Image 1 (cartoon, rainbow, N blue to C red):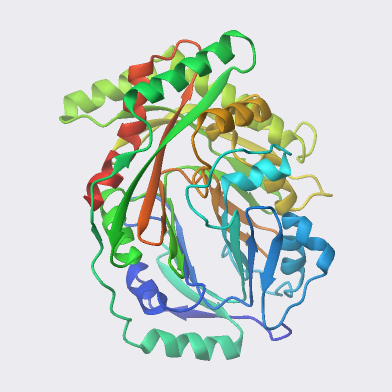
Image 2: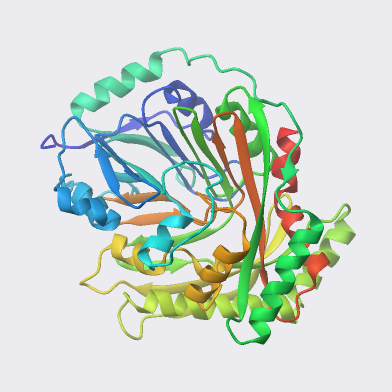
Length: 451
């Protein structure tokens, strides 16, 4: 852990996929993907071969697998404290680089991890046996900066030699990905409407203002999940995408939504609420966008979640620092239009980025408000746990930087079956058929890309 970090320039490529293909078969290979050249993200981060891997089991115990590190046993019951302990094992580099990641944690935090931190028990079955969180402690990465059109290898001298060797090797061949059956809905239209009506009763009774209700779809498949990711990315590139696979499991995320970014103590979250499909013609597309922008209901949904996120960030940010520089701004993606707001703040000196993540997790845009009651109702009405869906993918850098997504438009693959969820925020004046259709609109491109 004591070797000095070096930052070596590499030939720039606008496409991270070829680089990652050389590392795809390596242990702990992970890609945080900005979706370029179509999406507008700035950085791609690629790594593999972590010093340690942390997994949080379904019963909540956190375990670390490592040949080099042996964390204190008492941290097994506090996943976020154990993550901080792992970060503390890395030296903070002397480099003053503006690159986002110079070593630290990369991986995912599943939605169900939030139930543990908020003491919300669940009687739901698990759709997949993926850990509640899986994170690697990485001491190297390749970063592509698409704004500056530069590429960098960040590594110790020993690691640099290893990585340079890996990059010269021919990528391991991958088998084509094919579904062996069409996607099936876990809920029928009638069953979805029954749950929609239950949400309306809770809203009228004053239990909540908004509930994000999701439904799950699944299909069996054969072939390599990386090939599936390539198909999904081509169909719907987004700025907060990511891919990781291990054993017979994989996470394929095409998220358009940032959860929390923290850089130099400045915090930002970008909640999405409000959706319309893209139109078949330019005129129809413009009409749908204008309809969304003028929708009182969708703006009200968005403002509710902005207030929730202001409260969540306010728990760990400096008093008076919370601000909303953008409210209900239109952003358009290949399959949908969204309303996106921006909430910012300044992290208080006595809190770390991981403490910030824990305080705000899971994101309010995918729970509803108030958060704890909304999560209890979600747990009652949705037939299975959400797994990675509605959790987060991202990184926490050893210097105190962090960037995470909301894991919507996300597929979870395991043992030959792939799962995908579509959801939406329900409020008092929501209409059942419209909301059901919205859940389909959000994942139509993903399902279509694989079918």
